[in-house]
Amino acid sequence: MSPWQKSSYCGEGDACIHISASPARAVHLTESGDPTRAILRTTPAAWAALVRSLKEGHHQV
Image (tube, rainbow, N blue to C red; front, side, top):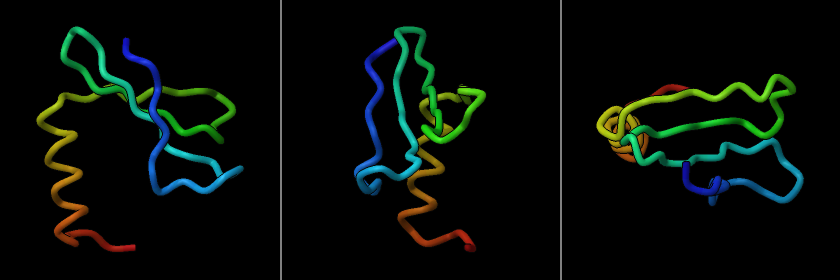
């Protein structure tokens, strides 16, 4: 697995999303404030679709 990269939208000291890629073509996500240190695994295509949707504003807060 590649080193974890912190989201560029994260401020100092905030709970942040971290992402890493694996040689097996999987994307791993974790949230630094999660005490269980759970890791979500998804495909590069699903990750790209999520990011594209967020950039296009197809989400609700």
